[in-house]
Length: 142
Image (cartoon, rainbow, N blue to C red):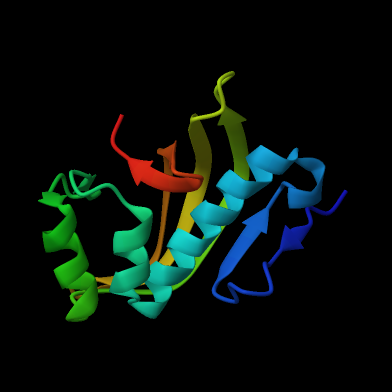
């Protein structure tokens, strides 16, 4: 059986493989949509959208072990040190807390990127934590 790939119409640089968003309930789909929007903003170097979708205290840890705060990471995207061309979300699992204000999205990312001069497709499994604030899902640290 062939695995279906889904692309949100608003996010042409992001694919979802192994899960049909239509199979999720409304809140789970909202979280997956926020994750896809976040990934698309990475590919477009849309720092305003990235800021709107992330907590001010969010940190990022790269495959190399480098840890950056939000603004350092966004600066590297803005100046092209980190360039994301396409992002695949493979086999995502979305879980929303019982009270509906926290969520996790776990998936294998396939990042077609140029990361500090290293060009290629980088695969890594990770979990992204989301918190609902004033009706909007925001990416947070644990």
